[in-house]
Every structure is written in C-alpha cells, then in structure tokens.
Amino acid sequence: MPVSTTSSCSLHAKVGVVAGWPPLTSVNEAGIAQGLDIDIARLVFEHANMCVEFVRLPSAARSFAQLTKGVVDVVLMVSYTFKRKQWGYFSIPYRKERMRLFSLKQQKQPVISLMSLLSSGATVGLSIGSYYGEEVKTLARNERFTGQFIGISTIQRRIELLNKQRVNFIIEDEIIGNYLSHKLSEKPIFGWAYPIHDNDVHFLLRKEKFNESHRLRINTAIETLRPRITAMVERYRQLQAPNEHK
Image (cartoon, rainbow, N blue to C red; front, side):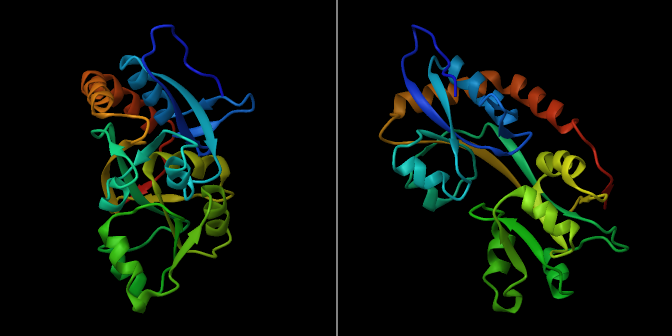
C-alpha cells in the first residue's frame, strides 16, 4: 500500500489494517487503505511529521501478534486493557466506539441487560479477539451461558449467520453495523440502543519503534486535531441510519 512521503518525515511506520471492517478500515481493489480510522491515522501521523505505510492484516485476532513480531508498528482502534499494555504504548484516545446489538427481529420489550437476553436462550455472535467490555467478558466466563457467545471471524460471516438465524444477535461497532447491515443483509437488521460497551479507542504503538517523545508528539497531534476528528466521526455516523429500537 502507498506510503505517505515527505522528505522531512522524522519516522516511517507501518500501520496495520484489518480489511474487513468498512467503513472504518478496508482495502479497495487498487490495494489502497480507506475508511474513518485510516483517515484519522493519516491526519494524526502527518501532523506529527511521521510517514506511514498501511499494511493489510489477515484478521483482527492476529493484529497484536503482528505488532509484537514487528510486521506492523501501529494497530488501530485498540481498547485499553492491562494485558495489551505489555505489547506497546497507548496513545491518548482519538475517538469513541459504541458497541451495539443488532438483530433481525424487533423486540416487544426493551433490552434491560445482556444477561436477560442470555437467560432467554439468545445466542450472540462476536468478533474473535475483540474486546467488548466487562459485561460481556464476565458473562462469557459464566458456565450458565456456555455456548451462547459464538466467535465468528468476519462481520460478513456474522451477518450471514444472523440472516440464517444461526445466531439471534450480533454485536458490532455502531458505525460498522449500521453501514454493512444495509450493504450485506438480505433482510432488515435492527440496531438496539442498549449500550453494550461505549469505549475510548487508541493507537497501540510498538515499543521497539516508538519512544516517549514520539508518543507525546502523536498525543499532541490528536489533541490539536480533536475538532476535525470529531467532525469526521459524525460524517461517518451519517452514512447509513437503520431503524433503532429502544
């Protein structure tokens, strides 16, 4: 994929791209990375006077392994966990993600809690290797709900299995779910307002590539560009707006 080039770049870094998450991260037929988080990364690293090359990753589940091996120097859209802190330096948050439930059927009653859905026998499709917050983490460890969380590698496959009613719900980033449910689903898919996980996301920077000075420059760029980033996020939120039910 093309490299942002300028003679004054103080550092060159490889940024990992999971191709299957449009409109946040994807790769077009020409091999060019595109999407909201790609746009934000280009903006931030250019402002920090750093050149970036976007490298396609095989899956989200393997992104951290690729970071620790030095295949990439930056992973996008990373939720903070203590374990992940071992793998690199976290930037300050550059935007928020909002994880929401999506289903084929409109429910007559509001979603009170994820536990109440699971107690009714519902199954939930999830991305393998993604973090969905403490509620999901705790329930997934509960023997009572063994087998009701289904790890599914791609959103395309999750939507396919939802259409086939192999799972009752999927959990997706709100922007991705709203966009792809219109593009990929044979049937109407409904987004739910229940907040599975509202969470800051960061750049995760490989320690062997970035030092504290680099991290501070990236953080300063994020702070300076915050109004522009917020406007970009809002534009992407308006790409598709499915029916939402409380």
